[in-house]
Length: 202
Length: 202
Image (cartoon, rainbow over all chains, first blue to last red; front, top):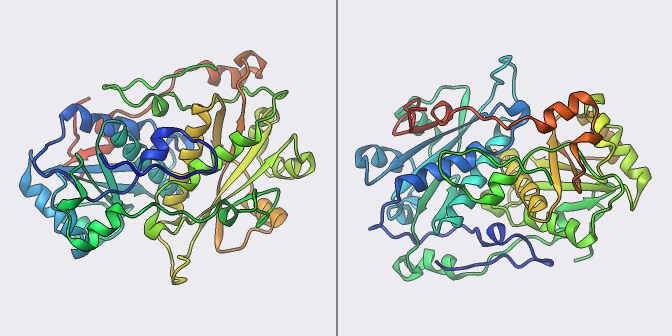
């Protein structure tokens, strides 16, 4: 596994620091059923408003059902297809828009689904797997192909698998794979006491 | 720290399993500046669509600026105020609605902010702190009090602090504090191959 530890001003939890969006997957290695279950369990135990658990997930396992996997794969855009082809597991995260207990709009549906999904990605890294979220796919194609109801919104597709060396990737993806990770300085989006008062001067 | 480990069908990462939404905070203990910084760094290194980092956070430290803290506290609803009063640190997570690189709507703004915020909560638990997200606050009051621009949406307020024993809480909160954690069965929101095909029969 290629390690690209987050460069932070103070030490943070190593699971959080180690997660990154890799593209080099080992196409020959399937993921054990218990590990797939653990990905789901990690999402399941995320927090949500009124404990509504507005997230839904569908996964497609290439080694278990290649036809269904292919249908999901076809929903990805071309840029993503070129590297995702090696990932044995595809998942989509889907956000509900209404509370179960009263049917009213749930303004935290997407927010809570984002939390459940990063839990899944963190769990992947803790088991020696890569997980990479993508926004580049056709919502409508996915909705039609898999009968996703209108009150649910597909948010991200996630490629999961065991790591391979970066050299298996085509040039443009290889460059991204070995490039350092970047974030805006803390002062850009972390404030104290009021809007736009940075917590540090970086 | 009261441990309420997630009850999962397979073992998951213990940081993810240990996070829960506690209410009993030690009001006498301030949080070290490096730990506040670590909370922010954990959020900062979350993933986001186009690496846009649409999240913004404002924190209020009772021990550093009690007046600003009080203003933020006043935005909470009454139910939350009754227990949050012991938490030395309040934070709000705020979601941007437009991409920085082109000014177009970012449909992942809230989703990515949810991910950055659960990273913050996980980081809190990894440092011996409790973190508890709340939806019960006035967006408009918060927006006005702290000049939050209209293209940004406050999503959750978060109470952070060192643990105290559950017995410090009033009866109704005490009962919740010692109650077991619950989630829907996996079959409710985790599917494979198509919508509504459960991954397990639980």
